[in-house]
Length: 321
Length: 115
Image (spheres, rainbow over the protein chains, first blue to last red):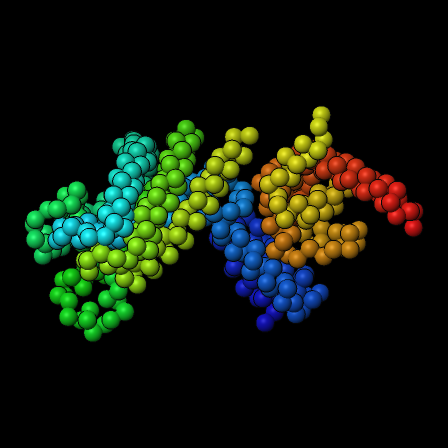
């Protein structure tokens, strides 16, 4: 392969926005370097590391991107993605606990304490989500009404469609849940069933195809469709935030809420960990391997989310300076 | 003005890129250079060859912080030049480094002799 071809291949490690700005000149430098030192693993490793760093910077997780306001928005989007992953797994664990309460009272202290802590945390996240979404919906809606936000129409429609699918599917399969109807917990049975149905895809049955095959076709389809709907909702919301030119005051407000969300994340994680570590209780409240995996995923999402929130604060400060 | 405070403020965001950033700013102090010319110049005066990824990571940060700026060019190799903010930051940083070097040398001379 020619030096130009090798340089072009190396440049692809960097994100498109970076390549648009630095791609040509960086390729020229690489060609000169390759002609001088035809074989260099250190150079390849350095370019790969730089490319990954640029991609993380573009996602608002570290480093510096040229567009400070854009990087703040990227950090907020990354935080929203981390929060969605965190809450997806957290809701799966929470729904197990609340569903358990519909059948019988917990005999273990860990399950009781975990249900109280996780329910409080979920309520806090619900309030934060409404507060965070309100100004974005307002700004995006105003732009659309004034016909200035044509590029917001598709992502907004995707969010609405995905939310409708999640709501309809969650209601349908939640209603089909074979509960006793004897509500014993402090979370309403309908809400517990909806949460359980919405997070049906977080299941250890994926590792047991023969058992999975015995599921009704509709339920299997929902287990495949529901995470896709959530991913579409996140992607649509991310595109809306990136394309809507959010005023600086709104960005500052969202960063404050991000800080509050980051403070609530450890509470939900602690509640889930406490339940898993407690381990005792009736079979209904017995944690499984999928719950341990969920907690590991939640911990990773928490770390990445905290990093994104910190980066958003730093970049907003440096952009204001 | 507290030079050390100013220096740490300007270079605080660079972390492990403070070294490459100083070398790039010092290289651009005597005129505009493109990426390859920067690499060769830094190699000649510092004995360090900055790898392409490291060089451009530092260049992007310096440009985002307004310490350097790209110069319009018909060539695919875009030259960069030092800005007034970059010159101020470099001067403060080098003054601070010089004070540290002078202090270290004085202490060495006092405890270990002139050898």
